[in-house]
Image: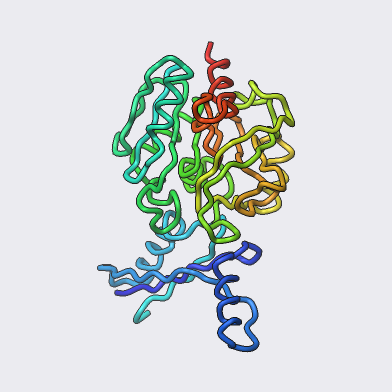
Length: 81
Length: 222
C-alpha cells in the first residue's frame, strides 16, 4: 500500500522560505496573500497490507527519521485505509 | 591529547580540523569513517563541517543514523568530550545528543563571513581558556545555522549555563534565537557550534581567536 506523509513546521517555528514565497506571490500581484508555510511531502510504498501495522511502522519512521519532532509535525495518509 | 575526527560522505572541513588538532595538540588525530561501529580511546571526538549526504531530508539527519553515531553517543554518555562544528552541530541536534534544531538562515542565503562571538560561559572544558564575556572573532560558513529551541529548553540552557557562545547582536548571521552560536549538553562534555574555530588558529589565517577551544580541551586532559 501507498502512504502519503505531510511534514509541516510547528506553529511558532520561523519559516523563512514560506515568508519568501508569500513575498513572491505578493510581487506577482496575487492579492490577499496571508501567511504561507512550506512543508515536505513524502510518498512511501509499503509491502505491508495491514493498515494498522502499516500506520504503526510509518509513525516509527516519522519519529525516527522522516520528521524532526523538535520543529516539525507530521500527518500520515494511507491509500485504501 | 588524543583525538578522533569522524568523516561522513560529504564532510569537507575534516582536513582543516585535522590540521588544527595536530597543530595545537602535537598529536596526529585518528580519522574514523562513518561506517565504523566503534571508536578508539580518545580524549576528544570531533564531528567536522560539511554537507553530509548532501543535506538530504534535513541537514545532519541521514548522517545522524550512521553506525558510528551509536558509538559517539555511548562515548558522550560516558563523559568523553565531543565537539561538533557546523554540520557536526547539526548532526548532534538531529541525534538528540544536543537540544534544539538548526533551521534555514532567516535571510535564506548561504553566509560565509567573519562574525563576533561572545564567550557566554568559561566554565566548561571547551571555553576555560577564554574569559567570560570576552568577544572573539570567528568565521562562519553555512546555510542552516538558525538555532531554534522552544522557550522551556532555551530557559533551561540559559539557567544551566549551557550556552557556550552567542553572536554579538550586530553580527548574528542567521537569525538564531537568543543569538545562540553554540550549546552544550547537560554534562557539558558535548559542544555544538556553527562557527569554525579551526579556521582561526594561526596568524597565517588572520588570527588565533579560535585556538582557545582547543587549548581549553587540552587543559582538561590530565
